[in-house]
Image (cartoon, rainbow, N blue to C red; front, side):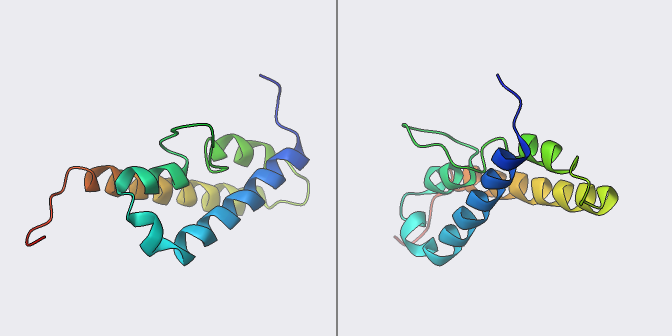
Length: 104
């Protein structure tokens, strides 16, 4: 696979931010699809032909942190925190697939 360019990595990040905004703004609609629908938006479960820009966002982060305009320490801390929260969200969405609701 070809290495990701700075421009492609930045475009992936911007598309990821838009995807997160969409997830927040359309939460009620997206969650009707269950945990897997959330995971698809998060890029942690890829079904069908559409791939979330959040899929392999860590690769984009590795490219972006090499930019001369980036504070390496701050960027590394923030991107690691983002990746940790993304993993936590994935775990919760995955678990939701197996949690049965009571009274429905």
